[in-house]
Image (cartoon, rainbow, N blue to C red; front, side, top):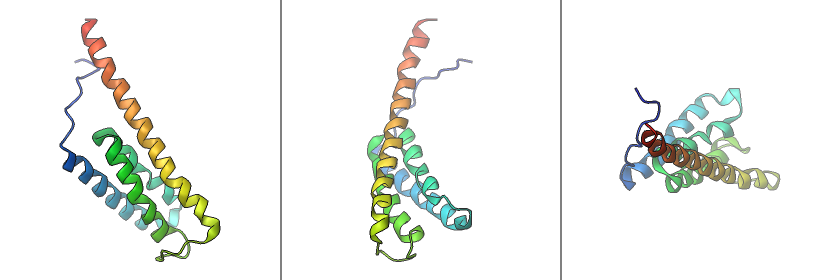
Length: 124
């Protein structure tokens, strides 16, 4: 059994963007349920990585954009409010940038892996 398998075709755009929305909702539910443990911001970056791997950079950006207001509403005091204290603005501004970075790194990793498959199969 070969270690490197050919890449699977990417799903259609509605499925990729649906994955961004669905993964964000699922992870948000887990983060709300596990609120007492802390570090929800790390959990809310997971949809960007999952979506980037299976859907590409566009859906990963959507997942990051959807996670940002969820972080503000559910986890940044005052809770369940769209008001944002001035001292938390940098925190909320950096969060989507982290999501974009994770998405970009994940897509780069997938592309590098896919580029190795033809080389591995041609060297046999």
